[in-house]
Image (cartoon, rainbow, N blue to C red; front, side, top):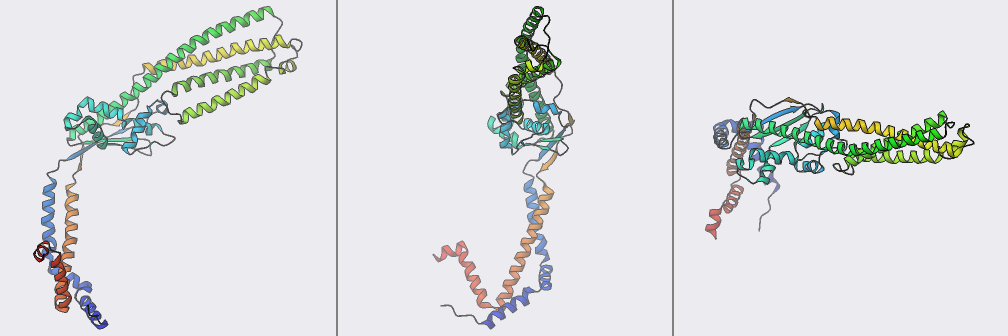
Length: 412
């Protein structure tokens, strides 16, 4: 049964402790007296830690800077699977991704890393499996998009010059992938537009001959300027609708359903179709008889003429749009220029990024001094306690001895 401790005894203990170690000057005096222990042991430990750090190989990092790509870079059909692979690299694309964001996605894509591991045999170089080599390449590279749009891309390796080779090869492989994507997309677009262009040319010829034959049979029939303008507007809408449908068909094969460009085209197609339905139901019907005084007596012939003129104008407008798209697709398909510009290539060897031995040495020495100071103060406190309160000191010594493995095993 423990005996109660009196208030006077507790105050005496507190006074002894405060008198022994409570004073700041006393603490400084103790540390100055034990200054040899305060810096010598941390210094020895620091030397050992720094020497051990030399057993770890140096890691070097090389960086390249890439200028912001042009705005048309965003229209490139980056495979959706490559963009999703960024999740494993800790990078995500915003909803309204800029060309720089998409370039960063391509640089970190699985396709680029797979190609590079195969090209340089990194799995054999590092002595690991192919999948692990791809994962290691991801951990040894990274991308950062600055506010200015400049893309910074880095790669690291134990060989400072191979780090240059690695980061430059990653950039070249991303450029090759970009150009292949643009070429494939342009080829698919050209082939699709080429077929529609042939069909439209045949429709234009057929509509032109039908209009000529109709006008030769009904020489006195002519359309009013207002009806002609209305027919021209309907033809432009129809041509724009067809052009949007062509673009949507080429994008749906490579972009997701939620991509902003796909959603934008679908919305515009719905609106254009509604406008055409409203226009055809009102302008191409009974309103011709009331609008055109010259053909009021011949509403059927006037309506037929308007329809034939409309068919010709639609075919003409569509043929013009398809011709422009066809020529643009041919240019993109044969284009062999870089898809982005590299501002600074890595050519001088990477800079060392780890191990940072100076930082390790300073940190180890400071932590060692803190631990040494704590040990010195604890030892001083115990020595003062042995004089001022031997009972408590003995109880602490007994408790400490019971925690030591040797003592515990001897007692048992």
